Image 1: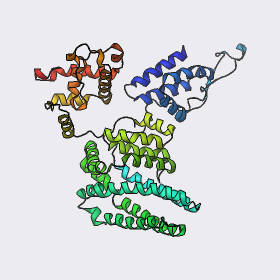
Image 2 (image 1 turned 90 degrees about the vertical axis):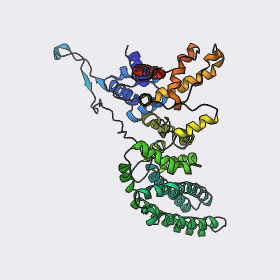
Image 3 (image 1 turned 180 degrees about the vertical axis):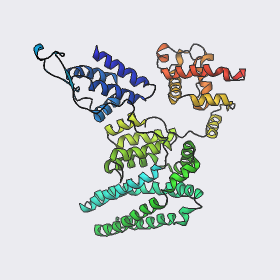
Length: 451
């Protein structure tokens, strides 16, 4: 029953993971180990069930990263006569392969910070300059105009991020160092050189365009190197001073990203396209893209990240996207929570009363609830709305609150009587989360807050 057994294990591990590992690594260890212990024939039978039991993107990553579509690794020797040996007639001879580690080989996932976005954009700009140079060497004016236009648009957003947030953030912890080092003046010079280049592009003299590009390219590369030399070493020191990664993400979002996010989706897509094509000075194309994206996700609100992700998906290969989604969870929400004040204002605008402040126990419970539970409640709310006509009584048409009133949402779930097909949509994580809340109710000292 090996084929079914393999498929069943994959299906359950892909759904739940394990105590020590996430979904991806739980499945990876089982599948790779089974492949290493199987004959060619055994693995040929098991593999179709494995494929049917796994999400397509997870299967694709296992195929590309671990070669699971190659044959089973145990080669059986031919039977030998009994008189030739007293040992078993069939001896399994495993092909030498690296040991399958029981510990995850997943890269160490410290809490990511958003500031690599600034540094990796420098690598994007270098890549754009290379594309401009390639067009010049081919004497392809039309191509040059296209790649330079995109590069200039990227630089505009990057400069805004620096001028309208990043420089002042660094300055607050370094006695105004960026201003003292003339970082703002670098952008003034850059703007003048680009203005001259753009004016030349209006004419027909491509040689004049090339001459002005050469001047601007030399200046801009020096500009990038100076910023990296002066400012980039300060970021880890400031991060250590602030200490809390959550606070750093919030600072990045409020002071740097949000004031300059009008072109964020395009900016993210362009960075991903260029980094995946050219890589960086330290990373190949995939890992350069990964560093940029994980940084941006960590510094974005859920709304910002949801606007970015479609552009990211269009800008890289399906294989790269699937790997980032499966291993690095880029399809989860942006990591910066929206301000409580903003949520309250939004509620007031819709005529809802602002909820009373939760006590400390309720706050602690909220922090214990994983992202999957909150997502599950949102799913139930959407399903309930879609099935509103099936609600028996208007008194039972309870509005499911969003994240800002999670406790109320959990309380109201039982009041929404929907058909069994909707109930079945609720994942086990949600049920576990509600059970966890019930277990904590004895810690709530006010009977009015017991749910």
